[in-house]
Image (cartoon, rainbow, N blue to C red; front, side, top):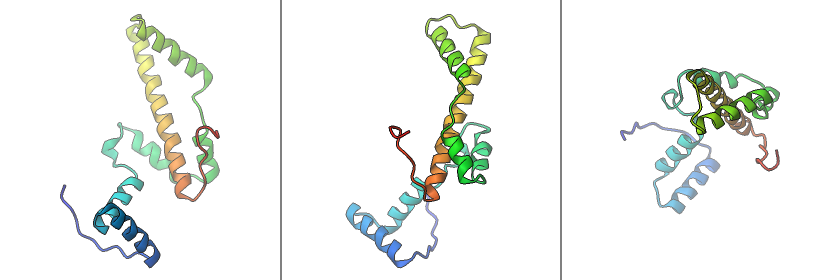
Length: 137
């Protein structure tokens, strides 16, 4: 992969932390810094299905309470039951083309919900808030 050179000015304590990790990993400081940035920055739009980027970007403007609401949200019970019934029909080989369309839409909605929940958790964590584990929820 091609690299682009840049200068990043870090506070001395942060640089020492990156340098310490680099020594431990036996890697150059710039490689460790690039890895950390890659792990913590949002993915590029081409990594997401069409239409999802705007939905996730909109979360960045929300306050903490709204992000918590999204992170804790669930697919409504009726939609969950419909999704499970359609998946059962599909597994049994009894899914009509109309049902397939509904299943595709529900899967897309569920995928977007999960992405929004995960992105909301990431944003809250970046804001310094503790995120509960799945067991704690």
